[in-house]
Length: 154
Image: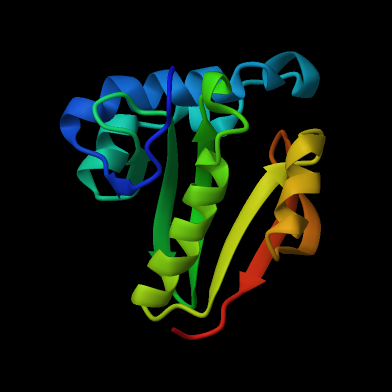
């Protein structure tokens, strides 16, 4: 992958294979560490795209994506994935900035997300972007750290 375009756009049906590929590339390294397949790898990407929950960077090549869902009182960030070849190029930053802006446009005062406790890289990144730990909770086979970020209005 060469230079990464940073605008974020809604994913289309044509992006579904790339959404699956980027998600797989981003999450596959965690399988051995956490001992199971991360939930985003098992998502129905076509359904998420069709429902308008997926936003991507890159056109035509997808370099990163977020899966978001408006919920009462917050925007839930279900997944953020950056292709390993695009690491260090500002893709993750652009996606997290987009999520904040999207939540504000929807009139939602905060963003919530969770990450597996063994995904220690994420546990270092999210606080740098203003996320605070809310709780640690085991959900089925997943040991999760739950975060929130309170947003200032536009």
